[in-house]
Amino acid sequence: MFLGIDIGTSGVKAVLIDTAGTVCDQASSSLTVSRVQPLWSEQSPDDWWAATEAAVQGLSAHLRARVQAIGLAGQMHGATLLGADDRPLRPAILWNDGRSFRECEEIEAAEPHSRQITGNLMMPGFTAPKLQWVRRHEPEIFAKVRTVLLPKDYVRLAMTGEKASDMSDAAGTLWLDVARRDWSDAVLSATGLLREHMPCLFEGSEVSGQLRPDVASRWGMASVPVAAGASDNAGGAAGIGMISDGDALLSLGTSGVIFVATQQFRPNPGQAVHAFCHCLPAMWHQMSVHLSAASCVDWAARFMGLGAPADLFTLAEQAGAASGPELFLPYLSGERTPHNDAHVRGAFLRADNETGQGRLAAAVLEGVAFAHADGLAALREAGTHVSTLSVIGGGARSRYWGSILAAALDVRLEYLDGGEVGPALGAAKLAMMAATAASAAEACTRPAVVDAIDPDPLLAERLAPKLEKFRRAYAAVRDL
Image (tube, rainbow, N blue to C red; front, side, top):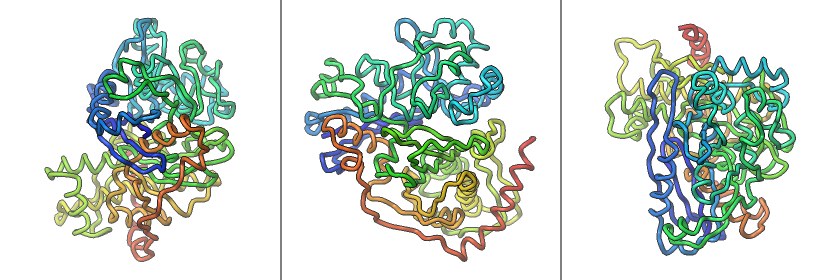
């Protein structure tokens, strides 16, 4: 058995797979986000650890006893600041926190070559500007910082006592020289930090430490090796075999991502496209990133007083795609690709006397699809050809939403067996590679396609006018 643990934003998921890569058991434990001020998004690192213990202990004790190795995946960019005693100095600042827009400009001014080094435009969601914000606004805390870790790597510290990270997650800090797969002293210096503040770097399938005996005892397993693991997006890709040049996926989790694996480092910061290391050696990837995807569905269901997100999908399907003029801008936490706008916020537009819950629900699904169409257009402008996307994440459960996405993006969507498991599956497969020396081709096999949706030309024709209005609407609300 191999255990994969994904430290997400809304919860921690633990998955057990066998040597064939089959999911044998899974469990999860929920998390909450603190938003005490506009633009802020934080979590307590200790909550990650408590949720990790709960999720792992929710798995079958019989299967846990057979675990040979553990892999980690997690939400990217979160700034976890530790003092000399390795305890958090403040709540972690998360990936969807938008407070550090001013600091992005400061870092790029201090290190004019940052875009060439990191391959990315400095954005508030990344880790480096968060530290610059703390340096400016909480100098007494910044002075005490001895280590900066990402969320999954804080959990690793609790599991193993080791300070380590993998290349895919480290790339999202914007302190990494992504082409060289090493920390950049120049960009670290621009935020007042040194290499000594950073964890050791590993490829995702390398062993980063051993499970501490006391943790192993509580979890009912041996003191097994812990693989370096992956960022959530790279882990999700590895889990469904997106490991070769041109392999592409659509992730519909809390955030939304279009991920394309590449054999070369191909940055395009001008269009706010992300270019990071993959969790596998000598591989990179491009991403368009949308800060709100399935989270829009959750929000809208609560907003409408529905019992569950599934009720929103039912209402939307009953109303029908493009059934009304309503537009939804899904910028609940700002946006990255292609706008790099931390301040823009979500909106319903063009409601009339006939607007009801069904048409609002349809507009939500369409709005997220339109945002992904913007992201895919940015990738295509960067020279990336995408005709098929494998779908993962919680949003993959709705085939109706898939029909809207396929039409808006003009791509074929493929649904894979177990695709909804997400990054934890990739983390478990990286654990298998660490323990058995299996190759990526052997461990990260692509699951069977259980369903596929081709773009419907008639639906695309109905959606096209709304997509054009959606793009104009961003410019209209941007300055508000």
